[in-house]
Length: 172
Length: 204
Image (cartoon, rainbow over all chains, first blue to last red):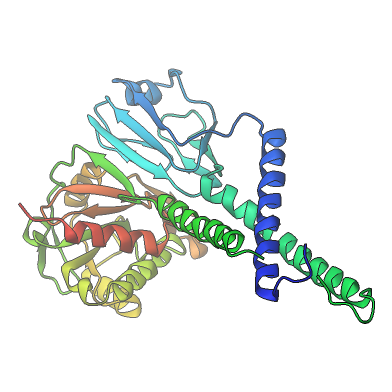
């Protein structure tokens, strides 16, 4: 970096360089660590068939859901109830012959009651999704401190080169 | 440093800021935060006695958003917590709270009298309407709203009983349609958000 640059220009260029470097590092790390469960939010539909409540009451096993269900943040859980009584699947309660839907907008692990699970409980695992916002956030978290360090380094370099200027000559 | 490079760097940073703002806006959840019901049919009507022994009929509340919760006075945890949330919701709504009715329907008609309801709700929020009635009437209401009620004899201190019950909150729109439900523990801000959305809707 030339020693003739003003402090503001030096800081600006350092931050820009730090951000570019941060972007590069975070994107490469993301590619290497992505485990395949990361996906865009989707609409996930489940159907409760007619006669489910009667089957549960009679102790007859029904085609149940897995005890744990995995979603990503932003998924819409849609439950269509074709039965003649209301049903509950976790946070979604559905009157008969209706459809209940819920946007799962908070990443967490939940345990809810479920009217058609033999255990009467269901676990919902809502995982955070990697959005453009979170990728930009990663770049900023990495890039801003890096930019700061580059700025400090460039100032130190500038001071060193000023000291090395031969007396009687002008710095470039 | 040449002006061109400076302009380029400044442009890069400005573009990045715009991208950040855009990404944060895209991330905002739209629509309702509760579990919505489609098609939204008319909520099951009921007429029960309030804490002042006046008849409260759901169908008379058209034009207002109604939140309904089922519980009982001697409930040690879920009911007082939910009713305290109702109070916070009213406070967050400010002036809009005048357009919202909050209703607490008993699942323990043998013990919850209108006088008991009044004393209990005066301690929490007297604006909440506490309803009770004959067991037969209430059973019809519980059934219409899919409420599970079961007495747990000997479970309470002193040999009394507690009542296991559904802890769901129901939101009924200004046209009297059952629109949304919320599980226990739904944040106050989610309820306030959805009530405001319902209040903005035109009454047909």
